[in-house]
Length: 405
Image 1 (tube, rainbow, N blue to C red):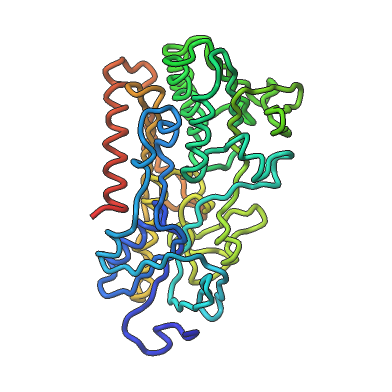
Image 2: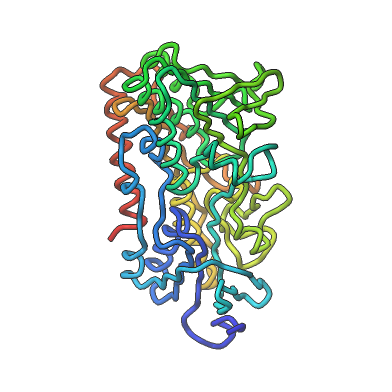
């Protein structure tokens, strides 16, 4: 099995995609659509994918966790082989994967969509055990449900502390959306409670839109402390739910640590992560600059100005598929123009968005001039309500296009 299909003289090339999130699933699907008889295998260790968009709405009691969960049956029905297992090793020279049970899988092109992992060494005091008391709720449904239960159990008048890390991390506006949606829950059920948002940055995505929403919807409930005013969290103490900053200590009743992150483990296994633990890529083909014939997309990729989001990952997955099909056919890959569309909620009826289109330039994916568009800062209630409903429509569409029939 060590010899790739093309070397063995077979007519059907083999592409393996590792990682079944928005990027990997979208890429596998597009490979099958664009590649005709291409042999496509998706390797994903979990039978069910739990989507991150809207997970703060689950925490706030606005939607059930089940609406975040998706399987891979529709991809299998499209002729994609789905292997529910982990990858133990990658041999780039032989172009093979070793799976968890020891089986080997050959490929002509490998695509890895690693997502993110928590960087457990980056924040003193915060490890996997600490996450049981100070949940990150940034991966998987269990952590989301844990934070939800903690909020429900908190007495009225309690303090919720959220820490936001320095970039890069998955979904730049998500900590601020989470603050607003938790405030929505507290306003309805525990109105004397407060939220303290400790930030390792002095500015953040959609900042004016979020802060205007907080002022209008939750006056006096959310306090944002930026880096320059002592918001940088230097350590945590899970035994007392305490956040230590450069100048102070803050004891929480409910503690949500959004920790520093890194590229998912498969990036290291495949040898495509650099010293930063993120993955440098060619922005035209998404091919790793460290390992030939291996492509990297989604949250783990160093994609220039393109943010780490579900929309970006899916768009990159489709662009990567087009590049892989072209390479296998001996053609020059097309110049990609992947787009990102990111909605944020401050309440069930208050939403806003940012969108942009990106293109390869100077070895990076940079924004196409004039395409970065934010919701207007002076939007009225009708517009905010419409964008909140548009966000739900976007979620239905992207999940159907990625995981549905």
